[in-house]
Image: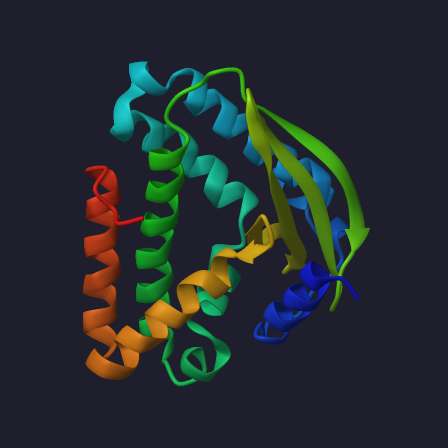
Length: 211
């Protein structure tokens, strides 16, 4: 089993939602996994090409509905804190965390995809993943730079196909955040975790997030 597949198996084991057939719903969110990812890529190229014109707030406003349509934000947020913590929270806490994480994620995309210099996305293919998921393999092609390998883990929940994790050059977005979020939560508690994510979101909006 490949390294990426092993990482993806571990990530999916954290998720407690149940997959259902994609055909249960019409519209963008019910499309094939590859179409979902390509919709995201189209949105990202759009804000890149209009980046200077839109500014940060404009890019956020434009990409927000695309992120909400293509991601399963609840599942990605749950994976980003881990099943052990997620299972302890009541529904109000879960909703508050998902809302905070959603702003963080959209801000991150609006910050990163801010200008265009000939970049393009290439879809390599789609293959079955663990636990009724699909892995959509793509690459971000950059002029005179090495391509970035972007693999998307997708799954249907409640009739809606969505992205539940993103792997950039083999590194899981959810896994990368989980260690940091868990440490803050263990040491300072729930409210402090939300405040810290809000601080990171504000820093990204100002372009001052630490690398």
